[in-house]
Image 1: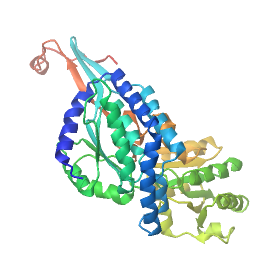
Image 2 (image 1 turned 90 degrees about the horizontal axis):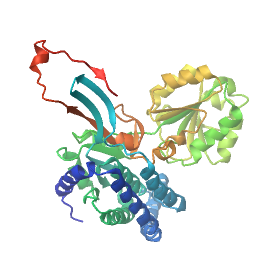
Image 3 (image 1 turned 30 degrees about the vertical axis):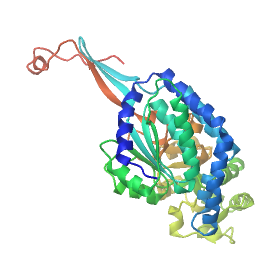
Length: 434
């Protein structure tokens, strides 16, 4: 498929100016049109997804694809339902564009406003997750951004039909600009995309460590995302042990290949004798393979030995490492050394320990007594997410609408010049309005 990447990027940039000025009603009509179109085309989407799954199964058998990637690729009834509902949830959200964030009266008749605005054109590179196409498209529409999407080759047919249906739905909405949702296909398209800092304002890679490193090393465009999802649960000596096992099992098995699944469980050494064996039983009952340090193996000898590499491993599967720690700050130290800054959790009924964990763990999401799987834009009430960021820029954690807008300053004057303020004839008021 021949694609002129520069034409796509240039047209997206031009379209983004029109989209940025659209009113909320038009954007919401566009979202409803997209949701309706996908809902009425479920069988067609599933048919195209089946083609991708057939090819992916061959790659799986040949060892060219792992099970977690195959799982991400597969669309089922639940994913389709969530996909459609996610679009409608975004429609319900407050429009993030043109909001007055802050205002200062610099002087009488000289008012300065900080106002939210779209970023512009966003390039999103993702692996075998076709549900990302409507998620990001809906967020882009509501936040006023044009997008260029590059999905994994494993989802070629599914991505293509979803993008086609979305653009068909948008074409039916009066006043909605063209070239807002764009799909590209090849590695060379990615290479060219990363060079187009003239047109593309932000790159979001959604995939493994190698993808993120490649993107960061090959572009001048700002990059927002995360490389790894090495999430921890620390079981404190004051934990509610009945709930602890349930939370650990959920965080590991509810969707093992997700970036917010737990990879390492840290357990207070006082719980090794009486609680650890029970936790192991519950995890193994759920089909989880466990790797443990020597202190844990002393009480559950049959477990596989964990190595130093395991503490920095994102398994993406039903595998978890368990390590004994001597106290809360030993757990915090481990997390800050080996964690990826994604999501980490403490299980405790001690408020002082919870607060210390929340304050000292340097991650985008810090939880108490809840599964790490809650780290998700849809579950946070953001409608959907364009990705999860572990960087410390304007957006961190699950990035929804608010993470897809930036701001500009608007100054409303009445003929003022700078010279009188410089020579002392006038002074600034600097009164906050908002």
